[in-house]
Amino acid sequence: MAPNIVFTNHHVIESAIVSGEVLVMNEALGVPTPARIIRHDGPFEQTGGDFALLEIEGANAPYFDLLAPEQEVKGQAAIAAGFPFDIVGSDVRFQDLMEGRSTVAPDLVITNGIVNTQQQIATNVSVLVHSASISKGNSGGPLVDMCGRVIGMNTFVSEQAFRNLNIAQSMPSLLRFLGAGQGGEVTIADSGCAPNITPPQAPTPAPEAEAAPAPEDTSE
Image 1: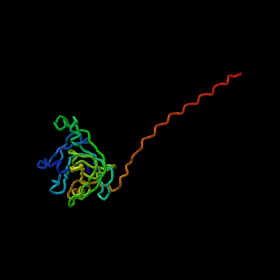
Image 2: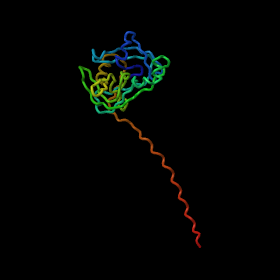
Image 3: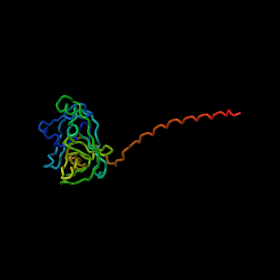
Image 4: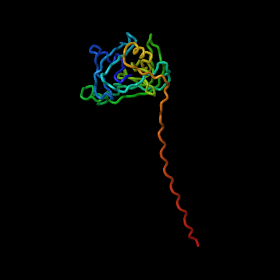
């Protein structure tokens, strides 16, 4: 949402609230970097929100735009990005990072699906139910459309008898939190998503073979 701002879940940074500082990293930062907790809202069960804003001094990292809440996302393709433990746990880079032997992040894990529905689950609490698989480690990561705009923040998995529901807090809730205080400028995208997909170039046709010369007539 801004070059020096990280928007994540409250429960991701909850244990660091007393100190007010956490370490964050991604490919753009390169190494674990201190970030200051600007403000937060949670736990979800008490406040209906699960958000935190972090500031990284001097950072100039790439960021996603946020999709305007009036844009319809139901039925749209969506991508979840993060570091789910059940996948990255077997990555040697992740193991070395957690043990302090390395500062190299594991490869980002992405999953795809569609937005099944948007629900109001409490006063001023709206969520997206989607089919892009998430698990522990995806919390605070983005749910984006095919044009790279954030449509929600992956927050929890609701375990049901026959299936698990992937839940992301949706744009009305995100923007309500951002509008309640100062957190840097926010870029809102208000257009529909029309991915610019360039088809692969057709193979260059092989040159036509030259016609063989006609045989000479040697009859007398």
